[in-house]
Each structure stands twice: as structure tokens, then as C-alpha cells.
Amino acid sequence: MFISINKQNQNFDLKMTSIPKLLKLKDYITLSGTTMGILALICAVIGTRYFISLGFFFVAISLGTDLLDGFVARKTGTVNTVFFIYQ
Image 1 (cartoon, rainbow, N blue to C red):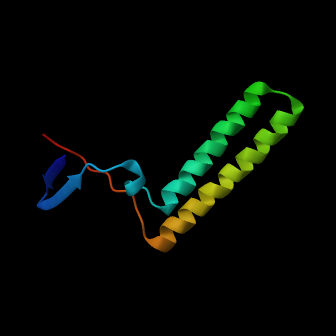
Image 2 (cartoon, rainbow, N blue to C red):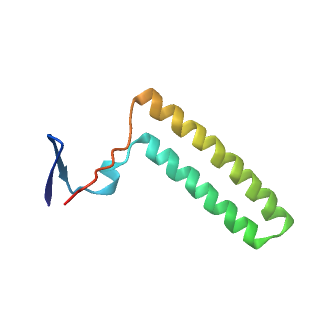
């Protein structure tokens, strides 16, 4: 499937591709941080002393991946583009 968007004299041609082809390194780092955050929530719900400690560890890793994500994005010059379709 092929979509063509013309907004303010700019032509954007979007091809519908698979998700792994669209993701870049910074996106994978973001996904790993999100996964760590979800694991931290699961550990908090379980609620034993061991799992709460493990949850804090996951939160620390999640914060580290957030910092790393911004660093990698700046160094590689990658940004996510958002297309607005107006009728």
C-alpha cells in the first residue's frame, strides 16, 4: 500500500512497511526501557520484599535507558517524524 501526502508544498511518500524496518537503534533502546518499566510495575504488584527491590532495580535501568536513548538520538541525528493529515 502506498500513501502520498502533500502538506505545504512538501511531498511525503509513505510506504506501508513492517515495524522492524521502521525502528532504529534509539527506538530499540526506548522499547527496552519501556519493558523494564512494565516489569517494575509487575514486581510492585507482586509486593514481596524481594520483588519490590527488583522493581527498583528495573526502574533504575529504565532511567538509564531513557538517558541513553536521548544520547544515541542526538549522536546519530535521528528523529521521529509525525505526519498530520488534514482534510
